[in-house]
Length: 262
Image (cartoon, rainbow, N blue to C red; front, side, top):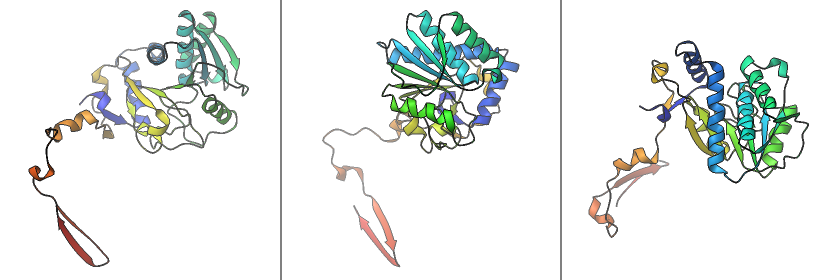
């Protein structure tokens, strides 16, 4: 079974991330660089005419991915602006390094401050898969500003405010046009409000070897239209229903049973 056909919990994806770093020897900073590059490539493919980017970054590794996107955009001649939330002192070493590299590349970084976001594309790098409580205060204001901007939104891994396991909206959530998911599909992208909030869902395993997935049993398998295609034989266009057998429908209610043969 392919990785892109399976759905995982947030805890399982964190375990896969741990295995990639500690067992497969992929540095965490390298995973962040690959994630940011995957988002940037998706953004350029979907919105090739975009020039101005608003990248909304939290202090965690999700925000670190956003700084990578901003740096790549700047190096590519675009005009990215990072709107930062949270305490930079709480950032991981990798996220802090990604911010420094973005600034060194000439990216403008400023506190969020609830500005109207006038831009061609927004990158949602605010909150990751660890969200367990309702979004409040400036975090809620940032999500509302993104949703109200009218610009298309590309979410990093998962739309901010969406619960990674249940697909529940935690008070408010980004309504993304594209979500670029890493390492394993989070089951919340396909349950609850996930499909409505996530938009088009893309996947990148970030080069994590298949060995890292061994013994991590996915929660579910994702069935696509391609999987169902072989279950129903093709019919000629002028076929009649009477050529394909009969269906017996048995139904009832309030003590009554009825049957109809079609």
